[in-house]
Image (cartoon, rainbow, N blue to C red):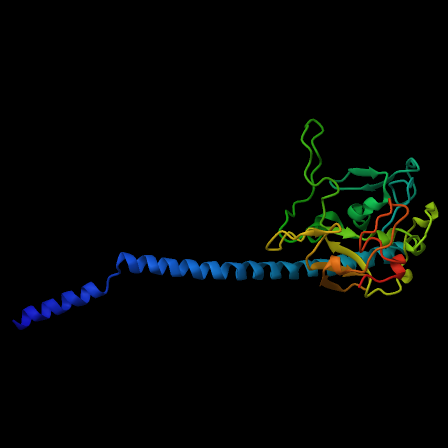
Length: 278
């Protein structure tokens, strides 16, 4: 009888170690809830890490701009009609065109708008920051970092991100025009389109040179307000420091009479490089 009782006790213990279907479903449900709660935090942590990378990219970009200024005495700019070769050699372009060397080697991009330097600045900055070594820092973390490829001349397909979407960082229009261009009531004059020298920037810690216009790493698609994402964005300032600020919170722009009266913030800072964005 004692032996029988012992066997029954062991059998009872063995049955208690199992899980019923209900218990299993409850456990799975709890795990699902925990994952649902954790995923947003993980996404935010990933975005924060990539934002840190973007800020590091901004500082690298700042060193490249400084190297360019040291070498050429001014921020990147090329006047319409100037030969593509910076040495001044080679055939001049028509007076209404600006052109830059692009990637792959041998590619040249020409445009009739100097304001396109907001996108085409690598064509000049690559004089001191070669494409192969620096391209990965010119695109937002999370984007493809493969160097641009030449479009197939025998294909009807439109190349992706060529040329204006190749890089993520936008170069402020304020650095390719004289400060007086961005004064109330200013009148358009060709002489106002010129290179800006570093000493002309009166408040370098408050004037934005460039910003990440893609921010592809953010956890959700930001809304667009006045041609900017309404989201904290990595920015490079003229003194070389990087910070995260909302473009929509920058100071209001003033009409640019040479660009269809554009008032986009950061591009059209009041008094240009003599003004402040924040």
